Amino acid sequence: MGQYSNFNKKVKKATRKKDFIKGLALETEKAASEQRMGDLYQITKKLCGNKRNTKMPTSYTDKGPKPESGRFLNFAHVTFWVGNAKQAASYYCTRMGFEPFAYKGLETGSREIAAHVVKQNKIVFAFQSMLNPDVPKEFGAHLVKHGDGVKDVAFEVEDLQAIFKRAVGRGAIVVKEPWEESDENGTVKLAQVQTYGDTTHTLIDKSKYKGLFLPGYQPSKFKDPLSDMLPTIGLNFIDHIVGNQPDEEMVPVSDWYEKNLMFHRFWSIDDSQMHTEYSALRSIVVTNYEETIKMPINEPAPGKRKSQIQEYVDFYGGAGVQHIAMQSDDIIKSVTKLRERGMLFLDIPDTYYKNLRERLKKSKCKVKENLDTIQKLNILIDYDENGYLLQIFTKIMQDRPTLFLEVIQRNNHQGFGAGNFKSLFEAIEIDQAARGNL
Image 1 (cartoon, helix red, strand yellow):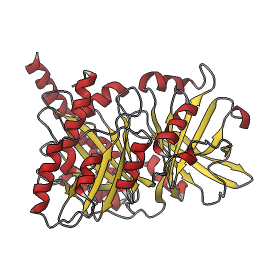
Image 2 (tube, helix red, strand yellow):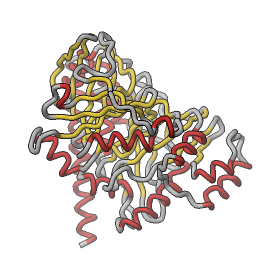
Image 3 (cartoon, helix red, strand yellow):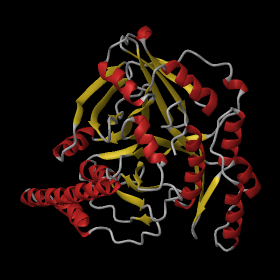
Image 4 (cartoon, helix red, strand yellow):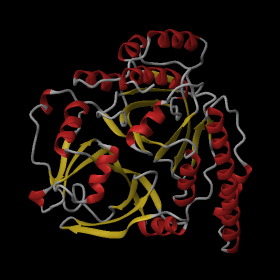
């Protein structure tokens, strides 16, 4: 049975490869006839392949052609679909140091959706839940299938119409055609397209809007008295958002971003480095031309047991957002204060820090932070000759083993912690084993 399964996988992979080449050939013919030189350039790169040392992560310097019109600015906000938005927002405020920011619901005229928006510096999370038993139907179906999770990752853009028209012309699936929303503070332009799984991207142009968040929302009236009693955290902006895919879906998804949004590959690594004794993953990071939005795309790789990526896919019911990384200028202070608020993080074995100290002795990289404090807080370090990053991962944020969060501090290092993946995976595998999912 196992031999048949492996053979079947090889047949499917060969078929997909054949279809992939056939699709590129058709794209080439169409792009040539329409004299779209940028598209021809991207197709040529795919056909040539990426020759690289699979033992090390690859950083890409070729951005490809700059879009002639339209520009992605930054992550605008992240929308969560949850069973109880009020409680979810309160949890992120109490544990993560967010503050109530905006609200819509029955009191504001919203008859189907209640939304509690929280903010910490430039990070904005919008938690939404249903007000009625069966409306909207897709909302209820999403909750049953996925549980609480990220539904939409919104990008703030310039020239929304140009970006939308180009994406749709290249094959992006439209969720909602461009529309406008207005109030006394101005007008916002929006459009929505489908990305991996049931996740969407909302494009937002707020250049003519001076309001708090979006039309239809009011400032949050509730001020939690606990906020003044708890320490501030110092998370500044979203560094990256990671999407998990089923096996062999990573490349098609990254290609979707390159083709439809004119993103480019920024960083990648495969299972030759990112593995433990039991599990492995592959990852490609895509980013916009200005490199202000980074989207790592992960998939599981075959291993002796179930990887944490496969665990996510199984419990989420498909592809979706695995974690959100938030930047801090002082991760030691941020993590110390988060722990004081009761946040739970992955436990890292002492052997990791013993090996780290030995490796740093032989490295040109000089870590400024106190290593004893780093170890006490379970913060991970990845480095090269130019700099280093510090990162830490929370335990899962809900009952299903799906979404978690990351805090990251960069010191002249633009990687994604490849040197920490083995230790990270081993730490996650301890929790997986406790859940009976390894």
